[in-house]
Image (tube, rainbow, N blue to C red; front, side, top):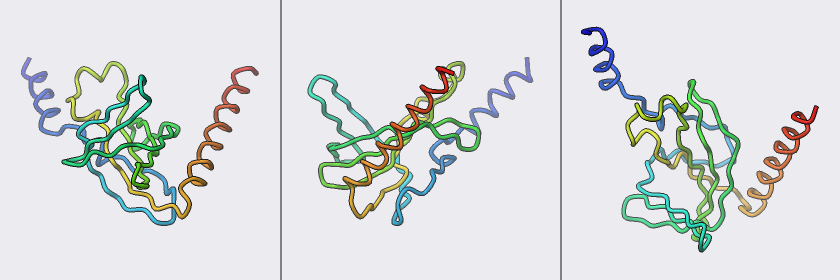
Length: 147
């Protein structure tokens, strides 16, 4: 029984810090690493709005785009590009633990965080390019499943 308690304590002393373990590929020439936890991320399907709360700031999301999942240091992450109403572009992410791990992990470990602030020269073209890539990846996956 002592060995079980020791392993539990070791896990508590050394909790996973998914935000620090995540590293995304370069998306634009100018990027600024932020690594800041998002306090709340509200998405309303009813009125089609998204708002991110970081500290005392509320950022309304103008445009968002899900990117394919990324694997970093053995962990899987959900990634999303967002553009705020103010025109700021960011890459946000959150850890997606395996189903059997979700209940054991602390709540903070699965929160969204701002990984990078992005400075694309033309945000509309930047989002359009990534949408085309996502659509191409989806159609390739559909073709593979048919074969």
